[in-house]
Length: 259
Figure 1 (spheres, rainbow, N blue to C red):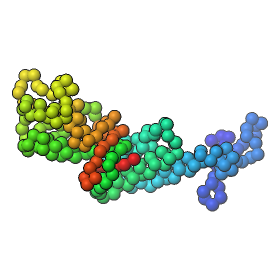
Figure 2: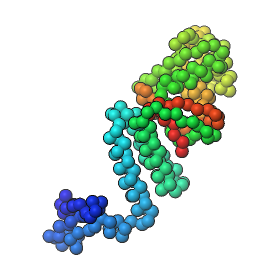
Figure 3: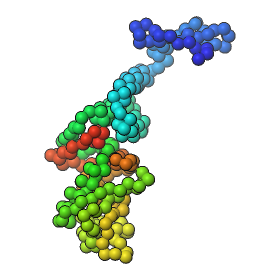
Figure 4: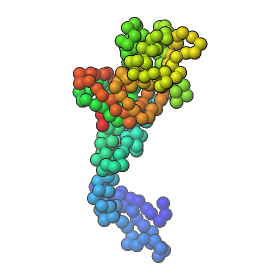
């Protein structure tokens, strides 16, 4: 692009800017080597960032070439989260940046690799968690079966990518059972005013707020944000207390990452 002309540099790694000097307002001396300009104008910390960013981009490129369009779609939100968003402004940037790029690369590897299992032998997991809806309903079905002492089988319902809930597919919940669930959560109808139906003595589904509260109760977790797709629930700024011997199996892009 005028007044610049770019050509490959030495050893196949550097490249050169050739600058037109027909007019006095243009840069002088004919050419600038990128490596020289880089070291003359960037402080040490900035050079470290640029090199780490370049290495990460190259790695993303290799991984994305191996992914199908569906795998890219499933991983995109997590990649963007770790690359651009997951930073604490009160802490040093570079360490966070390098950690985030490593985490994002791990997500991409998990997306293209076979199914794998993560054994959670830490006391807490924080960061972002991607849950398949089938995992959510399995977790909650087991949790309600234990709490209500009868077999419960749930399905998930996702509407317009901003609302989700769970519903029973093998019966309905009675008013006494709803009160038992509230007691298990140490909550009342003030916390969940829509839980108890006004014109019936039973219900098949829960609200999004109560469904979320049940999932958080089982996981001993809290989170600030959610992102929904047809297949996944992604929770962000999550903090989960994990029993030392507990393990889950996550398939494909359904990854649980520790930060």
